Length: 215
Image 1: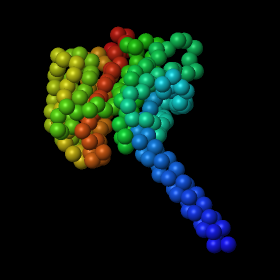
Image 2: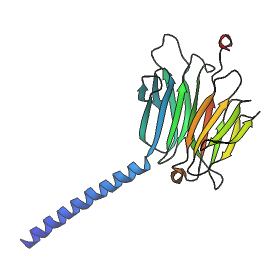
Image 3: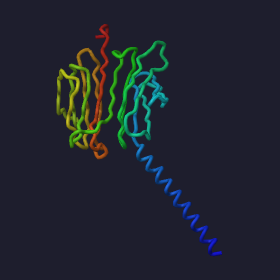
Image 4: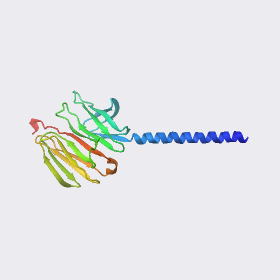
């Protein structure tokens, strides 16, 4: 009788350990796959593909979708315009996701790349100790950086890339403008700077060129 009881105790204990071990494995997997991506429409309906798979539909202007539990690393994202009678430009890019951080794509698709606009925010490993903000923009554009509502830098650059050191626990507004183009204002927060780790914030922008008859 004691032998049978001992057998059942060992069996139950083994089952508990197995269930607990599976839960830990599943929790660890969820922690590892904790990157996220937010995609917003600046105009028009869009369908979203991540790594070639349908991943959602944005149905209204100024609406967005949030995609969670993505694996950190490089992913391909493609946006297609919906419900239009003519063929529109499809936007496709690779985006680097980091654990516990949210990347974002904000775009409006026009019939051509020139009539499309938006920006992409993701991350890249930093080659220095402190994190930096790296902005890619249209050549000859003006870049204004505000931190906590104070203008801290202004660049009228002939180049198409600008790098700025990031301060912790701050709110940034990046203003990008160019003659003949619609101005962009982009909000960036480093309030979660403890999760930023040794990563730079990468901001890639595309301005909309105003048609000649509307200038």
